[in-house]
Structures are given as structure tokens and as C-alpha cells.
Length: 64
Image (cartoon, rainbow, N blue to C red; front, side, top):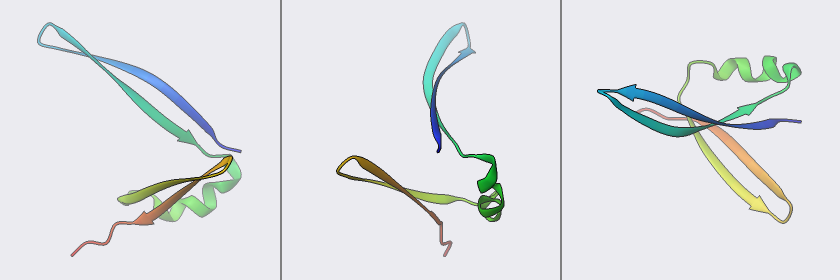
């Protein structure tokens, strides 16, 4: 099971405060071995919805 975490981040810059939302997808510890090969790589993400489920696909970005 994975968990989505929604966080609001505030940054102060030149006497103004900016706020934006960050979404983090946390995977279980036993998937670390599988996902280790994706470390420090740029990935494309595709999210599709089918009935009551969501499918999140990750693929490596191909550089020209």
C-alpha cells in the first residue's frame, strides 16, 4: 500500500511569503530494491483512472 501526503510549503522571499502545495507518494520499504534503479533519473509520469482504481506509470525520459 502506498500513501499520498499533501504538504503546504511556505517560502519567504523579499518580505513576501509564497505558498505552494507539494504532493509526495510514499512507497513501502520492500519496494526499495525495485525502485533503486530509478534513483537520480528523470522520469515521465502518466496517471490513468479505471473505474475505482488509479494506475501510475513511470518511465525513463529518453534524451536525444
